[in-house]
Each structure stands twice: as structure tokens, then as C-alpha cells.
Image 1 (tube, rainbow, N blue to C red):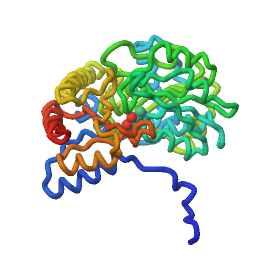
Image 2 (spheres, rainbow, N blue to C red):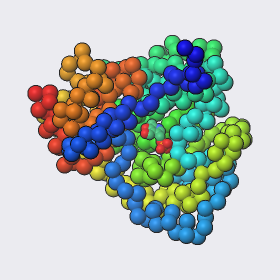
Image 3 (cartoon, rainbow, N blue to C red):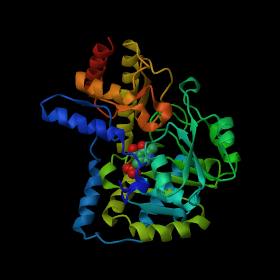
Length: 380
Ligand SMILES: Cc1ncc(COP(=O)(O)O)c(C=O)c1O
């Protein structure tokens, strides 16, 4: 049989969370009541103050292309945010705005890693990291995270993974899927390696215990990625940004202009207000996530499913399940069929995720409570 014209992209996988969701939808159509704990997005609507600005902005015909790096007001808001939150000084000219951070992740890797060269990333990590690297022709080299170490990154293992072809290290703190935050020591030691860091800080506002850090607190030799999807409950608006060294920005802007032209003007207006005026409103959502986190951990312990580490950020808990002979995808599908709880299989996040399920607590306390009751019956 002749090869498909698209066969060079055969190894790019889809999100298994989406497969679980598709199955859940099928069951819902049959009238089943499904509790969704597989999603990585806030269950809250975008705060009204933000939405209203977006609507008004459309009415005011702010519906055209903008500067490829983003409108000045938005970039100034980001500058103030990084000063306020991390006490780092950046210039608006170092910022590139786009339609969500996902495309910027791809762009960051394209920028720093020529085809054939390597990027170190963790195994566990957000499902698309290795795919985005490979789409750009880079080779992902994965360093395992282990429950026994509280999913902290072992700097010696990072050192072992470095080769003459290593061009960047990609980190994410707080991390999807574990909800862990990299320690200050780890961040400092990573920076000291002298290899450019790509730091995905999209959950940086969702830290419930201890201090959040930006890679910029430790080095300028980095690209910071961030976006408004999570803390500001704006997933569908598609707004993200990256911060980088002045010498990288010109190239990044050129590539971005070719690929995206710009983010939508009215979305940037909404994002400006989100960062400048809506953080206290958004903080209330973060407080509710923290309530649910504590509640979920308490309930899991009560039914004998203690995750065995402290997830202090984002809105995820990674749970090691009792029967390790089962595959996480099979188990999540079985749990979905038998008790109507949708969870993400750990294998979605890398080989080290086999044996785990990711629980998202971006759902109401009532639903989390009912899901735990069902899981109690399931695991007996
Ligand atoms: C770690 C991480 N980075 C990036 C993204 C994508 O965010 P965006 O909506 O800005 O594309 C997600 C979404 O789940 C994520 O978990």
C-alpha cells in the first residue's frame, strides 16, 4: 500500500482527554448523567467586567488587525503584571501577543530549536508539548518525574539528558497534570545550566500554598509563556503572550506576522481590562478552586485514595490508582461507562503517567462530592 501524503505527521497524537470527552458525550446522548472532571478549563464564565469590554469593543468596530506584537495597552498591562506579581522589569517591546498560548509554545520552540535539535521536557507534562516540538522538527527528550519525589524535577537527571544538540529546556510551573510547583532551588539550578528555558507560566496565578516564581526571577535567558485562559476564565477568547530577550523578539515577530498576523483587537481590549481591573474578581475564582482542592484531597483520603503528594497549584490532582496492572486509558473508559465520571488517563501526559488518572477540580463542590461517592463504589 502506498504511504499517505500526510504520513510524516502520523506520530502526532490527539488529546486522550478529548477521546474521554467524546465518549462522555455519547453516553450523555443516551441520557446518562456524567460528571466532567477531565477538563482543563475553568467552569466559571468569563467575569462580566471583562466580557462587557469585549462586547463594547466589537460595537466600537475594534475588529481589525493590530500590531503583530499586540496593542500597546495590552502589553503595558502585562509589564505591570510581571512587576506586581514577580517584581521583574520587562519592556513592552519584549512581549508578543497571540491567539492563545498554544501557538506561542510552538513558536517558542521553532525560535530556539532548529529541526533535528533537542528540547528537554518533563515526562509528565501537558499533552501537546512533545507533539508541538515534533511538528516543528525538534526532538523532545524527556526527564521523568516521580511521585516518590513529589513530582519535583531532579536537576541531576536534567544534566544527564543534556547533549550537544540540546537547545532549550521546557518547564511548566504550576504544572499540568500534577498541580505541583517547581521549587526555588530547582528553578535557580535550571537557570544556572545556561541553557535557554521556555517557561509556561499559564497557571502562575493559581498557586494556593507558597510562592509562585517566574523564570524571569532567575534568568533573562528564557522565553516566558502565559495566557488568559485559566486565571481569567477566558479559554474561548484565545489570548496569550510571550516575553523574551530583545534579540529574539524581532525574529519571533516576523514569524508570528507570517503565521497569525495578530490577535483580535477586541480580545486584546478585554484582556487589558482583565489584567488591569479584574484580578480581584478573578482571585475569587482562584479561592474557590483552592476550596475545592482541599475538599477533593480530604474526600480522596477518606475513601482510601490519597494521592500521596501535595498539589498546590493549577486545578489538577494526579492520582495513582490501586490496580497497577490496568492501563490508564482502559480504566478511565471503564470508570466513565460504569459510574459516569470522566477523568483523564495519565498516559496522556507521557509514559510516566501510566498508572495514574488526572482529576480536574474545575467543577462544583457538589459534583466533586458526587464523583467521589461514585469512585468509592467503583473501587469498593
Ligand atoms: C500547561 C498548559 N499550557 C498551555 C495551555 C494552553 O493554553 P491556551 O488556552 O492559552 O492555548 C494549557 C491548556 O490546558 C496548559 O495546560
